[in-house]
Image (cartoon, rainbow, N blue to C red):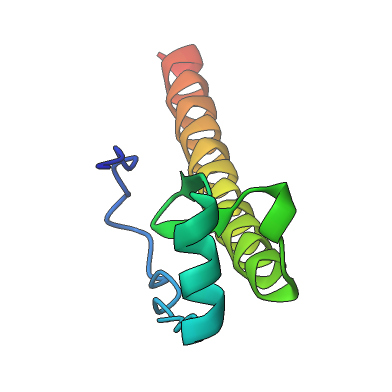
Length: 96
């Protein structure tokens, strides 16, 4: 499933967190295939539904939240930068 990502400003210098590969033990994998477990996608990560929620999937979600928080901070910084530019433009126009 492709997801659209927001366009990032050229001012952003942070890199996205590295993707971690997770290997499911064979016995758990076979059990899941038998039970036909539904999997949902959050970003680029797969998380099992409630019945098979593990500390590993919780860590994946925490990583996703941290990534979203980083993105929100970058967006807020960009908003503040634009507000400051607008304020400066208005100040210059008021002098004219």
